[in-house]
Image 1 (cartoon, rainbow, N blue to C red):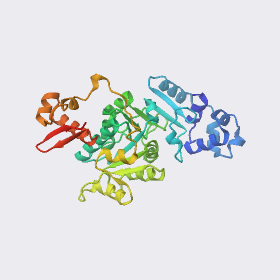
Image 2 (cartoon, rainbow, N blue to C red):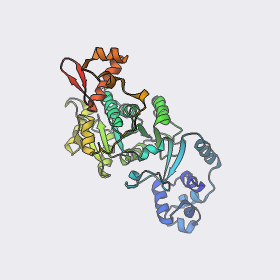
Image 3 (tube, one colour):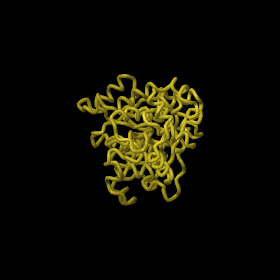
Image 4 (cartoon, one colour):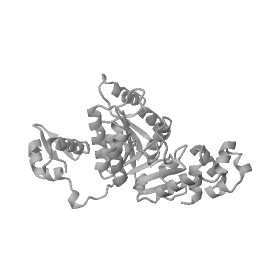
Length: 352
């Protein structure tokens, strides 16, 4: 990455749309910075020209360089070979992306999962279980690090083979909301956190709708789990449709306000889903998704415990050493994946 990219990224008042316009017109950051005021003024306001032609803010530049020197941190640009092809398909691709973690995940098959910040316990369980099952099927789970459904989706994605990517609406040196700080650390260690906003950027309201276009843009489809009629998740679903992505929704009770957004999406043509298999079938990607092989030490103890005859919950708890709560959650995930079946009498059977 050249210093010219950093110069462009840090120019105050020169947003992404202007950067894309300049790069289209001049071909490279170096050509932009050597083109002179007369040429720039055809594409920028006078104030933007002043900002671009001025020397970069030394303190900001040094802060970014210090951040980039830390392990796992990088700046991805449109010129990089590993810039995600899926984002090149959208109307307003980010010229630069600040990345913390495994940026290779941006080129894996992805699925966005979004929903209410004030999710019900059932909604949280559904989001985590679907995300875990889809991640184990080889999809990387993309969401926005918000409370509720987003956080549950990240936890499920991290628990599976495909991992998870968080697209945030602040600078990467600021975690919002603060309650998700521990989750953000996990994402940075084994998944990825991404932002198009410069370091130090505060959580301004207008940033989150912009973040949403990247969640859907990276993804083959978007699953909405619980959404009120005025939910921001519906913005993501609308943008996903505009970008030609599939939209999926989990139905709920007709008496629940958090089901109304999903029901509205289904009426508008979103695919109603009851299991992870419904999504995989629709994307027709079962044969193309090949999660990495797990080492012997990471084999699933529940599946191992079901290698013989069907077993009850209590028997499985004895064999695996898991608590009943942890075991129930794991069994739900495996059932959604289609790897086990529940039988009459509270027993479970492995599907070969």
